Image (tube, rainbow, N blue to C red):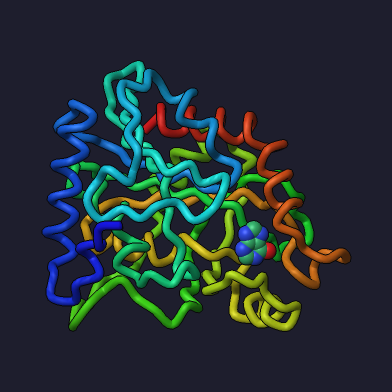
Length: 274
Ligand code: HPA
């Protein structure tokens, strides 16, 4: 296996993202993308509903991308054009912090998206719900986050402002499509173990409503690159201790599969309206 250039501490991750964007342009034939969308568990069908897919490329052929770690994370990048001519880069290749390859690899897809020209980053995930009124299969907007990973994608003294990180303008746009969308604060844990009930109580006490293992670090990197962020969680299960039953990865995938057609259609409508 060829070494990943991001693993060289002397390398500039933004330069590697520029090289990756050149690969995307060459392999898709599309020079510039307007919006990028990362697909989490349960959101996979959105790509088909967004518009016409003009190219699908294996992420492994793009500089700096890692091979997929999980079944259900397909490891491709797609270029989609919407009915109104908006170019969407659909990222089906997420690297999680728990894979142990470092934060640079976790946020590389976001930096690549920014280098392709995308100004809006739509981040989706499957996550646990802390609010008792929420049900598995329900999509919610992310309004803010608590980064509980003790990690950051920022290197050195980069003091990035995170006010309104999950853009209120984009959340309003989503609510124009579906006024029933609720929202909450996303707590990112490192994983891969699910949280203990005590950790979920801690997250709730701190003001959290959603628990997951992906999106906060990506959102920080997106803001650093000057992108506007829209975040969606599919509540795949009630969080540990909120749910009376034990959590299982199978159950999380099953909730994703059941909800997929409905939430993917919602997502495609929201992106189509931006
Ligand atoms: N916790 C963390 N990540 C998750 C969960 C959860 O309950 N469900 C799906 N991803």
